[in-house]
Length: 357
Ligand SMILES: [Zn+2]
Ligand SMILES: [Zn+2]
Image (cartoon, rainbow, N blue to C red):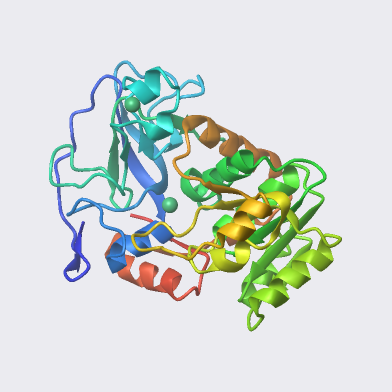
């Protein structure tokens, strides 16, 4: 349980909850540390406290509700099955869910490990825990046997976000795509853009080690932008795109300041999509002249739905032999050593660290 940035974490014990007919109790197999968890730890993201963080997770069904027979895709679901789930729960009953069919805007939405604390029953609402209780209405998916725990664990946040953002940005065959950042999001974004048919995928980062990894994830050009001025970066991207600029640029750094140069990288009429700087105070000045007269489509993308998660799992199955997904989770820690895991990710010594409770 995380109390607050000053008091940190403690191990607490709760009784396992009664499982409702359409709920499920899952024994967590692995839960990886996402940038959001770092923000919660540092206090730049303020969830309800105390909280059991951890939303990027998978596990084994320990108890299945009596009325739950299939997963969200209709496949048979049984106790003992490995599963992952959409960490955003939506109500299915509000105006946005029913009339607009826009669950991302659901007024009652809840996010495991991010948007709900652990003070009230059923308490077990996060992935950094031995068990998590998935309430009725959660979109649960059985994990195919061909995917290991470590390969699948970043799927329900990192990979699903990139499935969502490339869809929203309309990445399609023939395009040039720039990905800012070669962390897990950037790597997945590169593979998804590549598999959607992009002609050219260009990745930017300041770490040579990360750029080296990116070359194995479908990236044609991995550029070290360390020490380059904004003008240099713009010139380089223009040079690689026949003077036009990229069709689509995806920010996957988590650093708001990169929008300054990022918004100069799309071609006229191109798209800029941002997903990373998800903390309060991520404010950057915006060059409206550039935005308007170069007709840049600016997108903020968040809150994936169950369809995106299903696509993400199937994407992994289809492409698992083409890209070294097993390199994403670089270290595992028991629950008691969660702070060591957070530190390692914070210092960018691994792409992802995962908790094995
Ligand atoms: Zn996340
Ligand atoms: Zn709703």
